[in-house]
Image 1 (cartoon, rainbow, N blue to C red):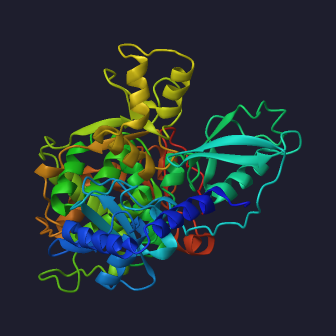
Image 2 (cartoon, rainbow, N blue to C red; image 1 turned 180 degrees about the horizontal axis):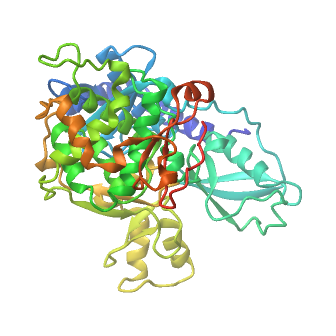
Length: 511
């Protein structure tokens, strides 16, 4: 009939329903009754939320992560200009990839009565879901089998002598119903040569993983670029001070920041904020786009609580909401000093490798084999089974079972793979969620603003110096250096520049 694989599956389901005849209505009624009895619900909270909120009457097989985002936004009345970022209770981001947000709660391993954390942010901070490009039905005399991550095998009609990987990808998009920009080659390098020339034939199985995000990993300077605007818009000067302060602290405090993370975690209860601070400051690793949003939005709320506002009593200074980030050094000075004796007993992380140990390639379909401590890639196990190669301490029968059998540990690894973009090869999973409730940004500063400014003297890397001072050897690196607000307004660049260990003035980074 010329149907695609997706259409064949839909037709099969329709035919099955039709065969039930008059019993179909009774079957649907039973399904609805079962759903209402089971009562799948979730809980969520957000910064300064007075109490945990509940989402009821969810269908984990039908409702998607995107449905959750829309429903939470509507329930909280945040407006059409605001987006929703979701995190697990431990602080792991869930909504970086717009494609995976279209998957069901079941497929994303969101369990019944899970607790989620929500951060609201302007929609322009979030990547939009790219529209699927129209694809035509593939044609050819040859058939190539393709395996798509967590979605199974598909057969694509193609001409091996004439067609390229681009043609194969478009054909697979038609057969699978998955947008072509999401299909990424797993084991092959991209080539414009014909399929025959790069060794693909009708006996081949071409593997694809799924992602709409880049595999290229930005460096720290790119990650700390001022390209995220918090919900309360900050001045250009404030954004530059904020990100440059982070950069300076990262250099100065490397390896000695866990007590600060623990203190911020206790003050805020925002484990998403603590998670990205741990990655950035303690492990010298970047985070995802959604984690960067948690960094900016979370620190804005915390800094706002630390600084005097119009309702503050016995303070001669008023810091307006749009100027909060201009006082990032004072806030960091306070946090550094107050956290010196903070316990880190609950700062326990498990470094999760997202790559297969034998191939060093990122997981697509992780499986666990009996008697083996490490998680393996399904395609690697399947290839070994077909070749009759046994792995240490297990039989071929154990290996065959592992391809089909799901385990809880495998599912959680899969949950991380679907949540963390392919640019990241490891993820430190926080383990002590049950022991640290946090104060949910209910902060009562123990020092006045004038004391915070006085205490800043103890932190040379957070003090602002004139632009020529490093040339005379009077500045300790790293430090923050002031140029001019006028130049900032004109060039849209950072006014606070980093002075490196050489004592030379660093070139201004634009953007």
